[in-house]
Length: 280
Image 1 (cartoon, rainbow, N blue to C red):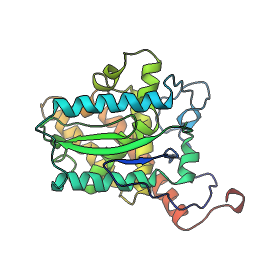
Image 2 (cartoon, rainbow, N blue to C red):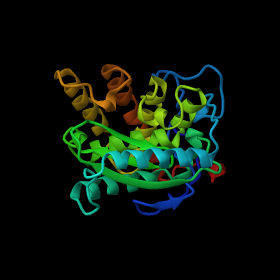
Image 3 (tube, rainbow, N blue to C red):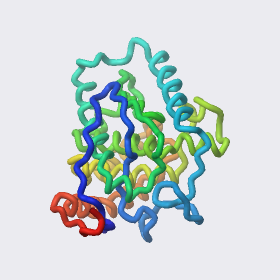
Image 4 (cartoon, rainbow, N blue to C red):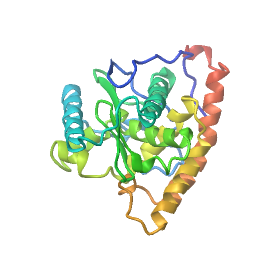
């Protein structure tokens, strides 16, 4: 499924919580806009993920600053509920996030997804907030927050990798920058008050499946995680923030099922070095 790509070892990025790196943006999707993938892609080709059209109005330093500002606000409002760094939940989240970030440094994946990357900096940081809400996010510049309410739904590390890969994909694809550029809302508000649109959500699902697979997690567990989320949604509980404005449960699960074998095949080809010499 993959185009020929160079045989390059993934770059090892710095440790969380404050590894300052120039990340050659994620990449990971085989034929993101291919027929049958279920993504709602733009009609016109462009420079965005999967070669779709994407307008980014914020300069790299503005995008980073916006993410830092929003993250500071979140942590301030959650003061007293941010778990300490030695908490087992925090160590778990940071360990999984680090593996995904390292996978995002694999150059063949970067080229496949075709993300705009020159000049962008990611200052990765991950925190866990003690809060019953089922939620997680990754702000521009790599600022990650996981609410403890989502941990029982993500029943193992592979399922938690599903969550983190999806959220990291949003940041790597500059989805918040794109939404600010479209004028949906001003500044920090668009990051904290509004959900991503369905096309961006499907895109993050797709990117995330490949990210978690290349990070060494089992993509089949992504299907199980979204089934868990469907049960939460159908159980009469408050709709999780994590699901706001996302694709329908059935469509998302079907899409993920289709992408899993492609991700596994791509990872196997990469591991076995089955790369065309011309791509080296």
